[in-house]
Image (cartoon, rainbow, N blue to C red):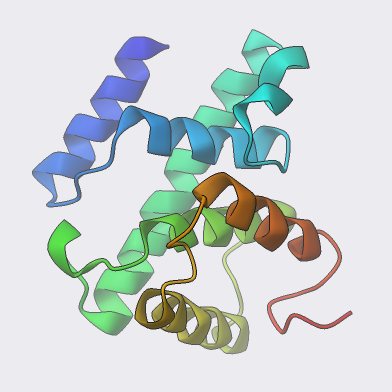
Length: 145
């Protein structure tokens, strides 16, 4: 699995996005458990983690393509909110892996931009991701039930 992780990181680095192992594992954790703290993975099976890695890389690829195409954020230095991408990946997972509708996509991109502008993930990333992922279980992209 380490080779797969390093392969994905190298592929993204070649495309201009410098993600780290802990970032990708945080994404796997968000997909597999819905939590940000790594301790949530304690009871997870190897199969679940491998599937989570496959899913999170697919979802992140999709969102990077959307962010690149719609917002022009085409490399790491202009990507102000990397951790918001994990929330978008979690949204996609909860949506059955389907891409968002146009209206959902636009609302989510609006929130993505604002997380970067206002420093939503400037504090303890795990704490903020936990608070952010929890409502996404029951609410849609609008943030209301």
